[in-house]
Image (cartoon, rainbow, N blue to C red):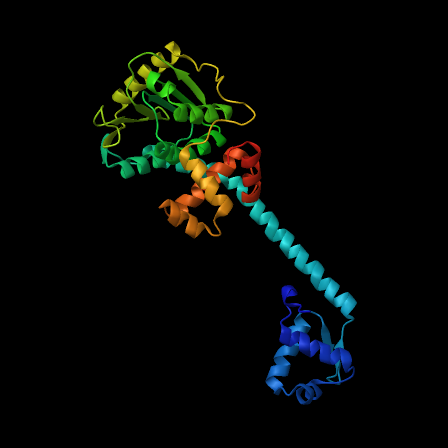
Length: 328
């Protein structure tokens, strides 16, 4: 067994073993027995002396320490060093709050245009993810129409992350969203995790507000996927916040969901059913991702989302829970 973990290289350990087996011998004897030159033996002896595994007598004879005592001393010394290192690493947590405050201040003070236009669905979704990541306190949204599966799968990681971080998540939906089963299943999932959702009969337009400081609205009111405007102008944002609060106060709670069996949970989307199917029959993630026509990273994100929804600790458990609930 090696003692390198205690700072004793294997070569020094070999030299130490020689003198344990050959008491009363000197450096010259070790050179002959091991086939080493004198410099190599002397270097090894210096290392062993520094660790107090040996000492030299007046006659240049190597005297070895009792290994039961010497090695135990090295172990205690190393454990002390590890504890000191552990204490230092643990103490690093104390700086998290101040670093987080610096980060928050930097985000709030970072120079940015008061109105930013983002074109293209993929770019819009990326900016939604960025803004959600840097949200610290609250999200407010008006959602007049339904979300499709792709919208939900894109939004779920950010929404769940915000709820886990304790961020207040409020959304008001319109009649079209209320009538859509896929949208409602997702929103009910979020309410179970602490999200707040209300519905309204007012004619609302799609809008998202982050931390009462940034507003996102479609550049084209009739096509929110084409382009979006990100607005930081304080006067405009304040008006959108005031409008949201008025809509929120006038809105009502979601109606009871009598169509969903509480034991089985909200229904799966077609995409989620496909992911679960591939999870139970595909040998590798790579082949499953190819079959779905998505990247490996995206497929693994789908798996992670489903595991979180099921409360599963691993993929095998996710498959069992999905079967128990009749999802697959």
